[in-house]
Length: 417
Image: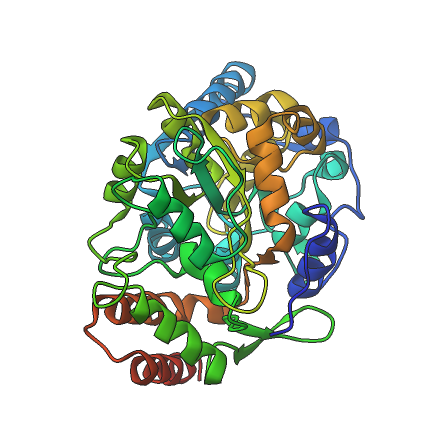
């Protein structure tokens, strides 16, 4: 696998994501935020619809209230399950039933571009206030297609009451340390009947089996990188830790069960993201964040992703919607509200600097240093279903690891064409 690390979390990822997105400078044509406001349509009698999930709704609602007071527009927030938003946006925007704005992840951009459902966003002179890596993640062919608000990756979350010392560097050593605590589970990771390749990805890359190969400049190609001996080794490792092996992994451990058992203090370690820290702390846990330990011979490299807001290509009020994003969401106050509602490393530089003193955020930042940007190429959309179900079938013992993994690679290559 060709992998480029992310020194000091973000700097090299800038170059990687720039290459992935085709480069370009989204802030090259600067206009002032005031000019954008003046250019916006009158808000009187206009309704903007925004799709947002439960966690982020309060922060968006606060910005929407100010927007309504100052423009006369009405903002309708539609709460949706985050897992449903991508598919619903793709299906409903072409029919005119979709929202003006939706929250989403940067790796959705490829499919949004291919299907023509997303419009560019002009942040005007606010562009310079954001982490370059976050802007580049939402940039395609030189155009910015979203307002980024957070940079994130999963990491190893440790319950310090059970495991006060930093986790060992290898998976086997971590499991052994977990067993020594006497907890019910030495390690918890959400899996479920459909698998979870996103959460498991750091372990997979430690075997040298990335989802797609990278070019010398760091950009992703459409060539599957997880086949061959490295993929076979990872598949066999999954099976070896399923119910027919060590029993560390189980498809019975769904998202809800993994979180509930960890919050109950029944495991010293889990892999999760900063979005669940508040929930875990509210359950009374004291936490520390460690890098994901390696299961294979290479360094574990989790996905680095960026969260943000997309503008619909079919919005009848695109100028006003862009005004909402630029002048009401792209502010330190709104970005801090987003962080407080859904703690992830902020994409706005000044807000990121403000929260970096938090040891939890510092831990996630350090854990992401070995990460790689999640591909935003359109082909990524053809990967998830084959990948997750195959992973789950191997773990459960329903499929032979090498045979199933080879079939998965062939199926994905067939879907990509």
